[in-house]
Every structure is written in C-alpha cells, then in structure tokens.
Image (cartoon, rainbow, N blue to C red; front, side, top):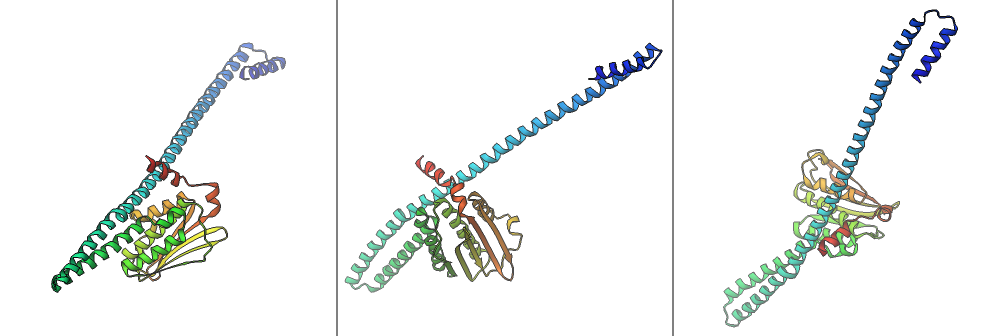
Length: 301
C-alpha cells in the first residue's frame, strides 16, 4: 500500500508538469522511508501486543488451574477432616464408652460384694467411682455426638441442630435454644454437614469468647432460601469479624462458599453477635457439592 500510494503521488505530480524528476524521486524515497519506519513501528507494537496478550492468557489459565486445584484440595481437606471426626466418634462410642461401661459394671459388682461384708465406707467410695465412670460415659457420648451427629448422615439438619442445643446446655450450662418452622428439608447431606459445622463453630465461639448467657439457633425456609442464624447476647467481637486471625471464622466463610451460601457476621458490644448463612435451594440441584463424593472415595481408600 505504501509503494502504491507513492506511485500514485509521483504519477499525479508528473502529470501536473513537475519538471525535476530527480527531486520527484528523492521525495518519493523519503516518503517511502517514512512509511517503512511507521510500518516497522506498527509491526513491533502489534507483535508486542500479541506477545503480552498471550502471556496474560497463559498466566490467567495457570491462575485458574491453581485456584481450581486449591479449591479441590480445600474440599478434600474438609472431607478428610469430616472422616476423621467420624472415626474418632466411632472410637469414642464403640471402644471407650464400652470400656468404661464394662469398668462401671465391675465396680458395681465390687460395691455389692463390699456391702455384703458390711464394709460400708469402702462401698461408698466404690459407688462414687461408679458415678464418676457414668459421668465419663455420658461426657464421651456427648463429645461423640458433637463430632459426628448421626442425624447428619441422612441429612436431618433439624434434629442435629436440636441435639447441638441440648448438648450445649448439658456441657456448658448455657441457655441454648433451637427454633425452626418445621418445614425445612435438606436433600443434600453435604450441605447439611457444612451448615451444621457453621452453627457448631458459632456456638463454640459464643461459649468461649463472647461470654454469652443465651444462644439462639434458628433454621427457617423463606422464598426458596434456607436461612440459618445463630445469635448470642455476649460481648461481641473486638476486631472486624472477617479480618481477625481466627481460623474458625475463615473456615465458616469457606464452608458457606463451598455450598454457594451467603455468609455474614454482625457484632456489637451491646447486642452480641449474629451469624447468618443463607442457602439457595436451587443451588443444591444445579451445583451439587462434591464434598460427599470425596468423603466416600477417601473413606473407601
């Protein structure tokens, strides 16, 4: 195009009676050189742009792969953690509780033998030992239920949260209530597990850090949304909730993101803390969480 434009320019000037051919040629060469410089710059800019664009695309693809791998590893870590909870729960329930029950039965027999020979003082001591063993059995069973509630295996989130409130009252002596509208149904056990762990972590934070006297757990369904709220009347959080270094808050937020749920924390020194998690039920059918499948494959290995 540059050569063609110079030829047209030279022809037009020649037809107009330009009488100095060497000047016409010189001007044509200068114009051609200028065109070549411009074309070279344009070519260099185009090549640089394409190279930069290619690097950006490669970097974006690598970043996406890294993020996908990170999310996969995070899900797998949570799955392994859940399986480890279940294993410890089975060990506590099937081994430790059974062992303590056997020891308590032996101690009861010893108590009866001591009373038969009228050794009341030693018999009372053994009776006290039996009572302590029974308290240990109850405590171990409560811990086992907290680690892996049986109701979650079938997705019965309502029963699991009710048990969480009852266990909180028994273990910590804190007024903990659970309220629901009776119509909440969770078809995905993995989502039930994540919501339960969010509620459990919120209750634990209220007990340990907020000095709460009352904790209210509520599960409701509204406009195709499953809404879980945990409210306490404690002292609240001193730092911005999601900016603190505590791993519990970050894990709760991450659990919510895994099931496509919204997550928020409102904390005020005078009003306590409110943790809210809202899950769109349509997400359960269009974006099924792979947590349950990963847990099955890992436990199989």
